[in-house]
Amino acid sequence: EELRQLVDAMVGGYLPTLDQMEGLLSLDREGAELLFQGADRVKRSIFGDEVHIRGIIEFSSHCSGRCLYCGLRADNRGLERYRMGEEEIVSCAREAIDAGYMSLVLQSGEDGGYTREVLGRIIGRIKSYKDVGITLSIGERTYEDYRYLRDAGADRFLMKHETCDEVLYDRLHPHSSFRRRMECLRQLKELGYQVGSGFMVGLPGQSLRSIVLDVLLLRKLDVDMAGIGPFISHPGTPLGDSPNGDPFLALKTVALARLVCRRPHLPATTALGVLDRQGRDMAFFSGANVVMQKLEPHRYRRMYEIYPKPHGEDLPIAEERRRLEALIEGLGLKVSKGRGDAVRP
Ligand code: 5AD
Image (cartoon, rainbow, N blue to C red):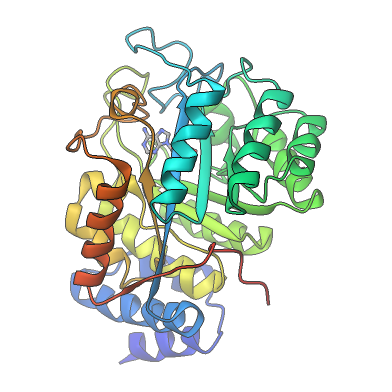
């Protein structure tokens, strides 16, 4: 009863204390139902029953970063790498647009092999084919690069803060720092990008309190999108012996983020689906309103191994989209026809 009152107050806009939020993340399955229902009410009040499908083109697996958790890290020599060429990226995007995609994410490792001029030309060519929403997810670059790419037509940028625990962050990212990450996020906002952030749940050394603070950081950053998913251990990394994050905790964190941050687009993350197939679908009833679908040729998808994952059936882009739409409609939800732009207050 007390729990019901707390969740009702949060649906009405009440910001709970840190201890209350930790309590919500500690709920068992039964208690969490109330949390999920509250998050679902807030989600429906903003997005109705619409799910946005975003297409993602993972165009290069080369990465100069050394993130301790990530399979793409430069030190992982056990991975075959690829780079898609300009024509290949643009034709993949056109095929996706023809299949109905209105929102495309261009993602890669931190790959200096693509200059801002090349990326800008790719953005321009996609935009002139159709004015879809274009999101970049290419990591830390110079302010000049960010400005150039914004001018070239990029609408959005995804850059997860990964963890707000600065000591943990700096340990996990020997090539960079938490301060640098925050600087990039500030620059992206200043340049007028719709900004997405997010973090992992269940990183080794991460506390429940720290996850609460991650949610509050999203609120403070006032993000337009936030990807929240469980950590998945990759054997080719220094964290190969660490246990996976708890997908149920990740699901509760998505629900908490919906209640606390309200308006951001929240994907039912791929990582959540990998650890718990049903958990990903449940996320659409626990605050999530977005799903991402990979678009690059399947031979590349297998190589883009941020974490180990099953490889799906090799189907054309249009057929994959039809199946995803059928899945969403099978859940009693509707597929959005829009670009999935930020909902600004
Ligand atoms: N488990 C879960 N998520 C991961 N990411 C990277 N490595 C892992 C992992 N082992 C996420 C990070 C990064 C995004 C590209 O993928 O949040 O920002």
